[in-house]
Structures are given as C-alpha cells and as structure tokens.
Length: 262
DNA sequence: TGGAATGTTCGGCT
DNA sequence: AAGCCGAACATTCC
View (cartoon, protein in one colour):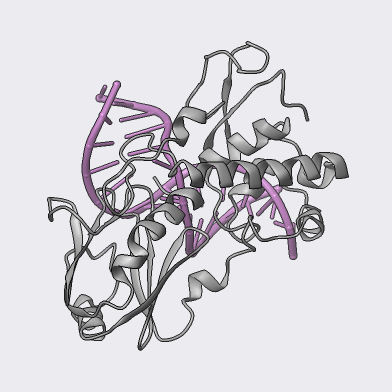
C-alpha cells in the first residue's frame, strides 16, 4: 500500500485526533510486526502522551512525552482511528479518549519504540519534496539503474514502485537508464516530475489500488491518474503504444518503450 | 497452481 | 566497493 503520498495522507488523517492523547494500554499479537518483547513494548507505552504525529519517508513517527513510536506500514499495513479489531489486527492502542488500531495481513509492517531517533529512520536519504535540485543532481552521479536508485530509501526517502514508475514516465526516462548518464536537462525533468506527481498524489489522498485507506477508512484517488503502473498492455496515454512491464531491481516495472528513452 | 503484490534487509557474488 | 541478485518475512488474490 504505502508510499510517501499514502503515508502522508494517513498522518494528516490521524494527527489532530492523536495529538495530545494519552496511551492507556496496548495489545500486540504479532512477533513480526512487533519484534522483541511485546510485553516490554506495552510497558514502555503505557501512560505515554502523544506529542506529535509526523512523516519521514514512509515512516510514521509519533513523538511521545518520553521516547518515540515509529510505525512502518510495509505492504499492507493500515493505521486506523475508526472501525473494529479484526483477524489481521496486530496492534490495539487504548487511548484516554479513543482507539488506535494497527491492521496488517502480510505483517511486513513494523511498530517500534526507541528512546531517541529510531535507527532505521536515521539511514534515510533526503525528502523528495524538500531536496534542492543541486543536491538531487549531485546524488544522481552513480552507476545504478535509475529505477533501482529511486527505490533506494537511502537515496531519496519515500518513493516506492508506483511513484518511481510514474515519475520516470512523466520525465520520459527509461527505467534502465544509468543514473550517472542523465544530462542536466533530463535530471531536472525527473526532479520536477517526482515533486509534481507526489504533490498531486497527496492532493488526491494517495493511490488505492487494492485496499489502501487512510486513518478514517477513506480511499485515495490517484490510481485514476496512473499512466503506467498496473497498465501493462494498455495504450500509452501519450503515443497509444502498449505499456510494457519488465523486471528491474526485482520489482515489476511499467514503462512506455516509445516515450521513455535511455 | 504458481506467481505476483504499494517494502525492507541481509548475505553472497562480481 | 558499489551494485546486483536472490531469499526471507506472511497473506491474499487471480
């Protein structure tokens, strides 16, 4: 489910509700989502006050009055402030006024507590909506294929498979292009494409391609704007030729062979 | 039935 | 040494 626009949408949908609330008690039931001692985690969270809810890359970061709670939604994670616990609910937070649920069928997501800055967040690259073009240009000077680089969270934090493919299409860049070989003009096109697409996707509440919903259970609409992702064999919006799907960096990669050049 | 799915990490190879 | 590859994690869907 969740790339930068989806995570941003979730954060916006729950921030006001959660900020200032106190965690009364918690219950965790997955040894994958909450690695380590789940009883110790519950102990550390009990009585804590949520000071703020923010996003960094694809992470949801809740600053507590003591420590930090970090949530990554993985592929199928949902953070919900409405609805009830079900078969795949692996985290239940009872608040002084309200409830917070973590739902995740595939259990690729993680809920972690740390005293200071969470280690996984420390390794993230810059935010794509904040990085300057000069820094983006400099960071592109590598041998890796551009699609692989866009998926690398240490390069830029927040892009995933959907928005990497959509950004490359919007910039007219073939996914197998070596990043270091991009001209200044093409790098600029890519930079603007990434920012434009992420911004538009946030405005539309993210992409609901299977079952993504925000914290209030509402779907996003950016899937209507997808030009290549999930459109294998369908006509390119630009030239009418069929969209092709290949494997790059072990991920399905959608592109138009005519409009996207190496 | 096998394969793929919005993600990340790790070990091994070149 | 950077980059690449496959596997692993667990479940659902077609």
